[in-house]
Length: 579
Image (cartoon, rainbow, N blue to C red; front, side, top):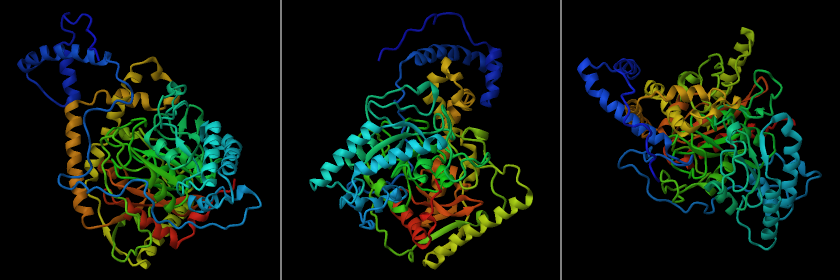
């Protein structure tokens, strides 16, 4: 790549001592006059390099030559089983045909798969049913960016031919699914939920799209996300959740995986894929009442996925049950040679193992009576977050409720959360109260996310498209974080290492820990890269309430197993919204 020449690079100094003095205040440094004079020449010489750098044509999918690893030296997991290998799941569904195929709309993959394998229904029938539901309910939910109808029907027909011929690929074969619209899909728009990108077509498929196609899954829709992975508002408006879509305070789907959460909960797809940087799987899973798995950082290739934060972005499934998440994760995890953050680590799924040998922590203060958290105002609010950092009741707001109603809801929430702990005690797990270390560090270095986002979208920030109304609060966040000093960014990454060390000590004593989804640990564990699962634990005032299970690095199997034990002991996952 040629480096453009800098016009007028031999011109007089463009930064004065007075300007440098002002900049020192931003950077928290105080040079003497002689030091300023000595630095001034170099600063002005750097301007030329900066201008040449800005003039370089750097494709949006080019990542920086800095790789984040969530594990400490000497603790890299040993290579594991082949991704996509057959795993044990309970596949069970009635053999008789339904009076209406719509009756299976809310069935999990583990129930749909036997129907397809036995040819009780065809993938084409299932796909047409979900297409009809997407068309019928999207006007109210606003969860679809692009219906991939022609592709879906072609893939479904292929699945039917293969299954008829005995070439069954596994439980995802013939299952319609939806992709958050930041995954590249060849020949189909990939909009990032943002006006400036609504006509963007990328000429290749994301790795996760390829792997699900290889598993025989049917891509039925590109689903909405908040603009550039922020919140639940995109260039066609706000995505709604199917439980309280008309509630002015609690109608949103949360974000940024808004469409995947809404569509999965509403029975419009068999499952969906989302992404998380700081809450974008956990939060919409909680608000929509679905099961969301945020895997360990570096578990799933992000090739072909929009980058918001190279050192924090993660991809994960959003499904109706825990076992569905295990199935989808098993199909998409592991190295692909195109994302060097992904390592070869095992996923050994033993769903029937007892919890009796497990030691599980819980943050005691988060299970005590307190009013529900108020809305945090979206992803870039407060501390420059890149994706929604709230979950559970958070993200909905109190909506001017009278104190007695706030109290009633808080009591109901507290009752449900503590009932979840009792489920684990009865299952034989050892439960102990814990405190999460490093919360102040995590708050201090939260700017890492939006600083990387500002770098990823710097061309947009400096273009006329930055004024597009669909971008929400991003323009100011990007402009603000353009002023983060490089030294402070690197220092924040070093502080992040301290955080990882503290969490390593904690998790060496616990197999997992349980929290509400709006836990103080949510942002912190996104920085450290730990896996988490959100799943339904009840309802408060007609809206879902969820708990979050956070596990050890690269141990999605145990994290999911802990979640599955709760799911099997309760019936919350069988409840779905009336559409």
